[in-house]
Length: 339
Ligand SMILES: Cc1cc2nc3c(=O)[nH]c(=O)nc-3n(C[C@H](O)[C@H](O)[C@H](O)COP(=O)(O)O)c2cc1C
Image (tube, rainbow, N blue to C red; front, side, top):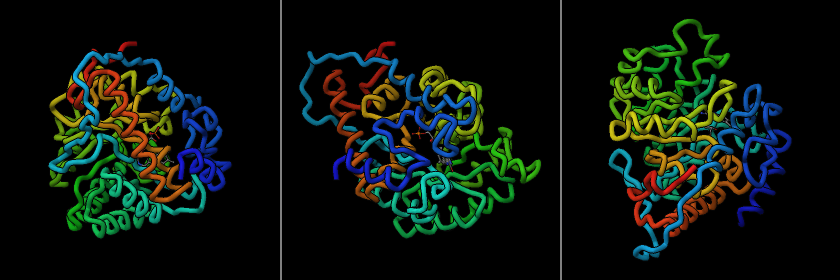
């Protein structure tokens, strides 16, 4: 199926929650649609998207011709087809419609990602079974996923990590920016924000590469590195957990300047094209996560939709590299963009 056709199919499934817009830019959902939309004042997802568009790529075709630039990306000893991964999404039936529940969504998303040579992060929820299923289903597919645990109490986090370890899953993550979500607040004092010492204990317990998702400041990035994070995701959760935040494009450069080389830097939020991926890598990210557009593709065409989007983003990234004189990911440097 063609990309546009998939969007049309998706809209039949996801409206009126998500309108599967031609460009997923946070404008139609604003703060009108809990889930895909942003928290009040409702402009953070749109700002994420808009700020990438304010970065321009510098064309330079007076260079060695490279018909097919290598965009493969090594992460924690595994080589992926591109530095593009699927962001974790939870409570999908509530936010996108009943075609999928969290389990079937995660299974099909992981399969679609693996078939595309990439991997999917999976989300967490109030129902503990969601993560249990995601871990067991991932193990059955070879363990190539990154379960993203919410900042529950130490006891609950350790229990979930023990499951990750028992099933030999590739890596684990925590969306620390979920600390303020009402269902975590309801768990009492032990769920929520983590100190560096608490985070270090969690990361040591994981005994595998651990990614801290939800970093928006240099100070936060340094604390994650101090705690031993193998990776960070520069992310504001797509504007869903706090209003009035800057876009990820606005903070990525300074964070990369502070911690590049000490941890793998991922970024997400409004990355919608291969040109956006190029912009993110030029600002200092090692790789990107894409969330809502992969959900739309899955709702529209299942695993095939995931591959259509992964291939589209990868093709656009390669096209931009060719036009900007970058024959490898390492050559996508800050001189290749302007503001
Ligand atoms: C409906 C929905 C559910 C989400 N659930 C989770 C989650 O469980 N864990 C998490 O780390 N991030 C979650 N996110 C945030 C995404 O992983 C991602 O950070 C965000 O959507 C920004 O990327 P995007 O603009 O490409 O969608 C969710 C986002 C949406 C829209």
